[in-house]
Length: 133
Image 1 (tube, rainbow, N blue to C red):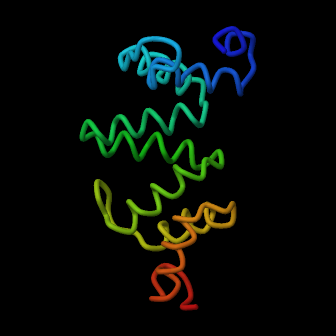
Image 2 (cartoon, rainbow, N blue to C red):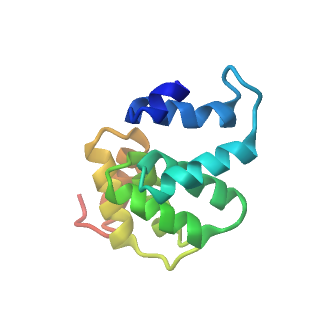
């Protein structure tokens, strides 16, 4: 998988980035995973942006997580869209904005993300950020 990633295969590269994080076939190495994710995120790779955002959120850097997830969401990353929708709904680390929440959740929902479908439905039911449905 490392060879596939180095040769430019996006699928191989994405899988190779998970190896140090999850310890698949090699020792688990969170520091190496972060280094790889940062490098890929600098190139705009949406999975790396999302994973690095998760790490930032766990470290209490909400603003950086939101920045990274916004980049990933703009590329169609449904998990980033769902996370942003939930963050904008609750206002954790950012000003509450139910219109933005509904927009991100809708984007992920139409791609089949079940959590986004549920949360978007709740917003619609209450007429928050969208027309009441």
